[in-house]
Length: 316
DNA sequence: ATGCATGAGCT
DNA sequence: GCTCATGCATA
Image (cartoon, rainbow, N blue to C red; front, side, top):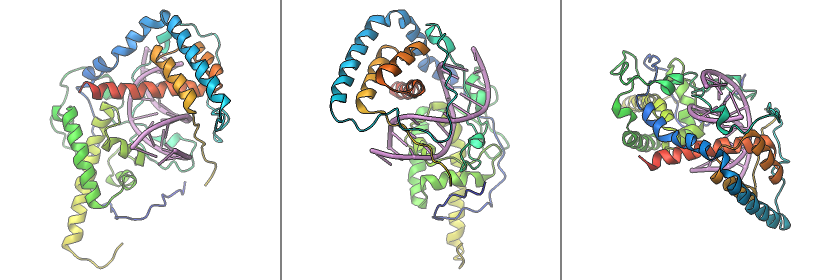
């Protein structure tokens, strides 16, 4: 509730911002992205039944790896450290079939507001629903591009161009630094823009935006927001320079699981063979590596996300 | 800067 | 149970 960010006011952003309105961020590059990124998903299914031998091999390698490392000094049981906040609803259904891609997984949430987080410090960050399913499932080529009468311009081709995004991210970082603002400051200042649906963002997200380690869609969705902030911040600073005014203006923490190098290597070996293991395989892997099943599942999810980004940037 | 985690929305 | 956006915690 009262969890204010204890940030040093590097630079005070005041809410004298123009009334920007919310823009649905549609992405016409969605089709492209999916075509480029989701191919591997489909292909992975093909191996669903062929991976047995490879898996066996990976398991063998993993077993050796672990055996060796456990003989040595091993920091801690990756499994033993844990969240104090909640126990993930780890579905322990042991009846899952080997349908591999089964769940499949569709679009996915989007630019969520974390206001539902059990975290106490979860102020109202999140961009709630920007882009949302919109960016995800938009297939119609040019639905409504051009400009909105809002503060944010809607998506144009140039906005979805990877090259342009990259250039913007670079400029953004340089100008942010010139303003003497930290990534965290930017994230917290976003809420001051008063753009409907736009809350604050974390330092992590700003960092990832600058380093292009977000998904393409995510980059597209965030760009106009950060651009709006940048313009606002620079405008505010100009004002400050023009008129040399005189005035200036707890709870339980989540524990991060740390998967030891040997186990991680094993996971990578499994991933190379089957990026989308069935629930049962995940359980098996978890047992072999002595990790929680959920930890393994999440690891695979995160790994897939990472690979997707890498592949995208690789072919662009 | 990045690893592991959560939660929304969807299949 | 997946994807995706995003966050906390930490190296």
